[in-house]
Image (tube, rainbow, N blue to C red; front, side, top):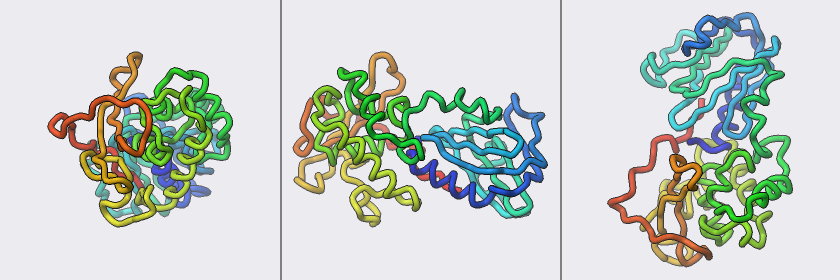
Length: 287
């Protein structure tokens, strides 16, 4: 699933192309919205909210999409060939006189009144890349369940919105804490939250995601997707294991950590043969 900085950048690209322009054609290729037409309405803004993307119009409508693992928005000039995949994968088309925005493989496409947006994003915690960012509130949300492991707690968008598996792993590595450490045992939770905030901000304006400061291929991350490779600091083999919660068994995610640089509880690492390849959804989804 894309991280919050990916959705933020996609929203900015769409905003630059569509904002203050009238829609000349719309096509919702999901059954519930097949007869809806926003032609004539003007796009006022495109914004992200955590991992959600919201397109507002002057008629008070919001087009709400969520990328999940495979969704993407692509931008084309009118008449250009669409290259984001087979046409049967297109879920929504929004066209102006200058641009055509095509949403591919979107598992979530909603059309609702902007006044009712809280029904789809009202549950989210403070957005790490939004105007509502509030580190103190994010910390308080995390501390509300002190017995929870920090890894799943950071991924819970109700606590703070925008962190995915990449920034979870990298923030905890840079904080020296294993993902299995309980929230109550973290002495400086504020530092963890602020570190995640800095990492997302550092990557929001460009397509490549780096937490090490290097954009060279293979040098971008400290531990993420580097299982059994040497730690860049101490040389210890990076470990990986699945991590989830009993109440949400289907949401288990692979966690990466350095057994030497990160302190706290951890399970036995998975063997390479037991690890599935990294899902394709970790690639950037930028128009």
